[in-house]
Image (cartoon, rainbow, N blue to C red; front, side, top):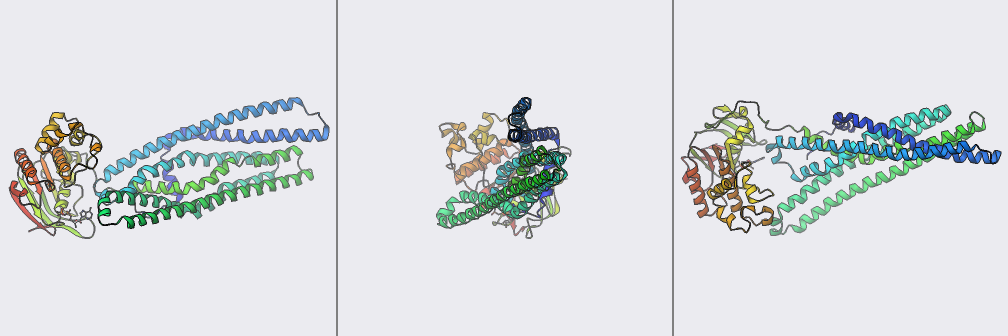
Length: 562
Ligand SMILES: Nc1ncnc2c1ncn2[C@@H]1O[C@H](COP(=O)(O)OP(=O)(O)OP(=O)(O)O)[C@@H](O)[C@H]1O
């Protein structure tokens, strides 16, 4: 997917966070459990370390005189905090993952809704592999953001704040050192790491999309690749794309490794700094031994939440790159808006009025006008690329005209409910897409809930019934079982059977018999002429034989009728 202007990491985060709104309660609970959990872990270490060191101190100074009550209290506290830490961590993770997977479902719904709106115009030119990467892996990676980013940031902030206050209460200098330490590990290092690996993160996600696209494209074109001996060239290209991907992966791994090393070094430095400062203060008798111990232990054991933030920046770039790609797709404006709030329309004829149309710069239809009377069969004949299929797409409102108007039943097509338009039209193209499922399911696509009898009748009209009946499982044959063995002509007849079953009043047939032999074409044309009573048909074809059916033929050349 082409990236337009790249938004900042913060704005991506803001847009993603908005999605959490409906689950704010669960998020707050997760943060609360996370903070308490971390505090348990921190005070577990402080209490344990304090118990051991204080015991040793007593032993050295006073012999075995330490109070047994104190040891018991410490021991019980340790057990309570250890158990609580486990339970709280579980609770926090549960809340975060609950939110993440609920939100991923919401995002998937949104993405599919957008794809429906963008179809077919906006998607005609899109790289399918890239779209698949967005729908599958990009959305999946957002889990990291929702489960492992938002609440860790809040938890790190709150826990560190509590710890700064606590350490400050031992001595202000200790408080200041801890503040600097947390800010370095939790803010400065992630920002530094984030900014140096931002490009690599975005490139990596785009590389994944491109590679997907390339593989899918190669699979579609495998016949041509073999025929024209392109295998080696494609393989080399795939290799170079894989290498680019792995180079980026290496870069990201390097950033991750070096960031961890620097983080650990900084933690060590701050810990020693705290220890020496506290030792000085103790020597100067500004603090007591216990304060020295507690402040040092408290800071050493409380880097957990900030380290989590620090390592987050490694994944965050990739996650934000995914967020950017998903958000860009969600924000794409459909070329044709769906209409649903108009009065119902039934088909009473159509006309094309001085229409100009271009997909991009180049004019495809140049001042085209056409009157399609109800009940007539109209033929459009013309050389390849003259704009015949484009005209049909405008009549289906897959695209909107640039200037001029298309009318259905006297109404501007922009004021006809999309549902009505789809119901009244039957559209058959040269290429019929087969879906997973049985042949019966594949014909039923055009009429939900159609009975087998209706399907068989449609198949007979499309001259495909005998072929289907000859298969061992007949209409229950799984299309997948046939592999690629359905011929183009058989697929095209399935397409025609769909149109017959749909039984719309307005049939748009784009080379509907181009893949058929003369015999089958004859049967279908006979069915069409029998079925055409009361129906309106626009038939696009190169073949003169196909045109035998039509009442009136228009010649199209260079986007104009001659
Ligand atoms: N989605 C698209 N984006 C950009 N250009 C397109 C698109 N679809 C078609 N075109 C271009 O518009 C022109 C007309 O195409 P169209 O398919 O309407 O011609 P046609 O007369 O039906 O051709 P054929 O008989 O070969 O099917 C062609 O030059 C084609 O490349």
